[in-house]
Picture (tube, rainbow, N blue to C red):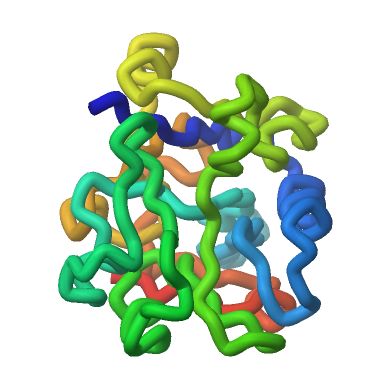
Length: 216
């Protein structure tokens, strides 16, 4: 099975949130829901010395994240593999095929270490990023990729993305440990985020985000 996924270059991302807003508009999401989230990340310290010099470990960068269409999705496991959420045979994208049939939407939300699924406040039904599956089948790119003005996002066959970006990895702080679900994502980590641990990151825009992901 071909596995599609996202590539994110954190050195290009300026935190403009265009990808996030384009996604909300395209999918007609409410103010309370979003499929792609841009996290504003800060941390470190600045400390003065007796000789009036300043030592700083301060850092700041942005992370744009959506569904990672994992190899072992927690959302599917939370449904008991009942067929309401599946991995598409053609693309490997994780799709909700029967939202009304999901017995416990909140359990699915909590099962995703990335906090990706959301519950529509209008219908009470589970929703999530599907990689703009219909656009992809029509030969187009996901709307978030199309909208990014800095071209920080790419989408395609995961093997091809890996070959095109040989230094890319599958995690950047504060995203969850990739061993939990094996995400189909490739990330070029900017210098500010290099060697930064998830527990050392403060998401400064957390109050503006819906369903801020749980970190592991």
